Image 1 (cartoon, one colour):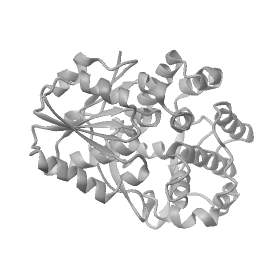
Image 2 (cartoon, one colour; image 1 turned 60 degrees about the vertical axis):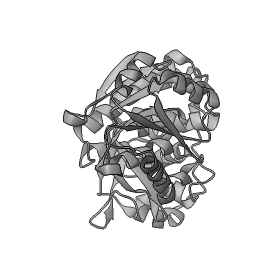
Image 3 (cartoon, helix red, strand yellow; image 1 turned 30 degrees about the vertical axis):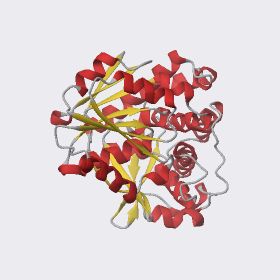
Image 4 (cartoon, helix red, strand yellow; image 1 turned 120 degrees about the vertical axis):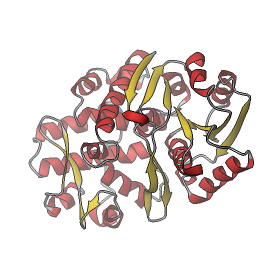
Amino acid sequence: MSKIAAGKGDTKYNIYISNKISKRTLNQYLKTYNKLLVVTDSGIPKEHLKNLKSNINNRNVYFFTLPMGENSKSFSLYQKIINELVKFNFDRTDALIAFGGGVVGDITGFVAATYLRGICYIQIPTTLLAQVDSSIGGKTAINIPQGKNLVGSFNNPKCVFISTYFLNTLPQKEFNSGLGEIVKYALIGNRKLKKLIENNPQQIKDKKESILRIIIEESIKTKSKIVTRDEKESGVRAILNFGHTFGHAIEAYNDYKNISHGAAITLGMIIASKLSFYEGHIKDYQLDNVINIVDSLGLNSDHRKYNYFKLKKFMANDKKVSKGKLNFIMIDKNFNGFKTSNYDIKNVKKALN
């Protein structure tokens, strides 16, 4: 089992990575709480729920199941989880467990941040995307009609347990969604991870456990290092949004249906890389390198159905708008990410053609 530290000061927490979750380590955390509410969703295999129940020693454990999908990150379901906590008289000696993908983690963390002005929660992400992205860094949120994640809070978990065992039952579409985020870390500064992907695409696609463990660890190391330096996204943390401005706009354009978050972000990274090329930050062969990495993993790089005029209004609601101008995350010739508001809008339109 590997352990990575994230956060700082009072909000510091550990991330445990293994094939299967250590019952002993899990209960070292859980024994401090009187009651637990496990928030999960309808897509979690019953065998995983059964294993989690058998691993928890606490007597007072309740379960709340969300409908599967992005639409569950809503005010109405937020209210229903709050109602459950009130019904079972949860107080600050109790805790929540987020057991599922990014949707479950985001809404559970937001409930934990706001109920009684804050109670503890633990992340047990079951999808590759949640393991390398949303469970790390304390971003919690729900969606509103105007955009994704526009209501939320920064709220670090007490700990995160990551098990590669969950990936064995993960649908290919969801696995690919997580690979998109892993590619992101490779393109914004983790050269070791980039080389690992370039040299082992087939082993990654085959879900070989030994290589999966390494690329998950490297992804988490990159994210935890960045978010520890910048917990509230006031500086360097912004580079983690590489591809997200375009990707979130693609998701919103599709009304969060028929395309996964990771697939949208993958297309967003292709567009952001093209913008980086047109702005002169990378060479043509480096743009080809980005596209080849994406293609080698069996991910979709074709964004032709999304042009500037289709996505413009959704990008205008992006959280990276500052003083009326949208900031973009681009990459340079050394494959480091950076944020900038200095760009030619003509190149944005060109990148989306």
